[in-house]
Image (tube, rainbow, N blue to C red):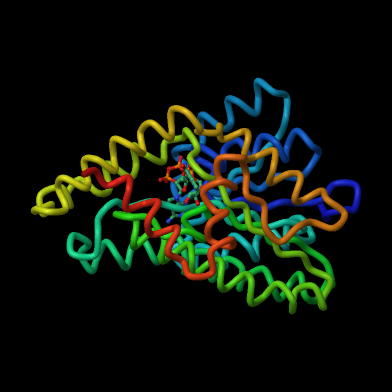
Length: 286
Ligand SMILES: NC(=O)c1ccc[n+]([C@@H]2O[C@H](COP(=O)([O-])OP(=O)(O)OC[C@H]3O[C@@H](n4cnc5c(N)ncnc54)[C@H](OP(=O)(O)O)[C@@H]3O)[C@@H](O)[C@H]2O)c1
């Protein structure tokens, strides 16, 4: 079943829930051969049920972005089976709440592994194939946390900043080789993300000593309001990812909402960086 211009192939990471699941459905609905990867294919039931209900087809494959062999096997298998990968969507990611003092070495490494090394290694597996073809798109879901550092998100933001730097560095080379590189930068999105962050960060609460405890409670309270008021849906983000895949000349950067653009604006407007620090300090209570 070779990939043809009439049916391009997309490979998406992290499709068991949230943005990844919605993205798989959107691409399948748009006629892409959709390789929906997840680290635990035992979690595929929801995606498969939704695909069936929408009368679209997704092909579920295992891919754990922290395991090099898993990435290589699935990428090589997809190229061999379907003749190529036209679009890679690096979506898999995980958040973490805890400031520098509360973040253990294991947690820091895990967050960097999933959010940064996972993207690096998946892109590295796909780039030689796209380079040889002289075409292909690599779309990575980062975050406004990849542009703006946020308190208690130091590890997560460090990883997303790293992806931004990597992809901004690669984008000009990609362009010369006929490839396109895009970043998708959401603000809050109402998915499983926050519940997963809470579960992953449960241990850090035990080491929240003064003065962090007070600032943490104020910040978490303010953040909940932001998700309720400005949160997008997984499908909102999926539609933007699909648009980046289909645009004749895609942008490098897609900031996904007016709220997200408002948060990011001081980063470019104030070259001293002070406005960003002051804006987030104000959200840490009195
Ligand atoms: N939600 C937000 O507010 C928000 C805002 C900005 C950016 N983002 C970014 O958007 C992307 C999608 O997040 P989401 O909101 O959809 O959150 P989510 O519902 O928690 O989904 C995260 C996905 O990543 C997968 N994943 C985690 N570790 C993995 C690994 N080692 N290998 C492969 N897959 C792995 C998860 O799989 P399991 O089910 O197996 O854990 C899940 O499918 C992430 O990159 C996130 O950083 C989210």
